[in-house]
Image (tube, rainbow, N blue to C red; front, top):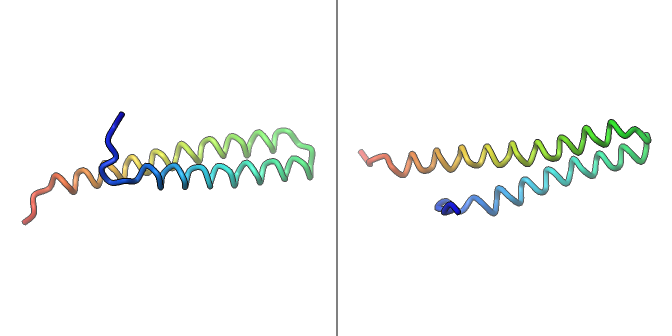
Length: 74
């Protein structure tokens, strides 16, 4: 397990869950209104992809912060 030096793991997980839950709720509400299963699947796929995208962005942020930590002060 990796260390969380910059303490971004909780923020990443919370933001990912909130955005994913939003897409899931919109998909379920849209399905109840239209009875279109493709709409539901599309929004559930968006929920999964959004969680992955947020995780990827936060990993890039962690790498950037690590690189800034390694730089010597001028």
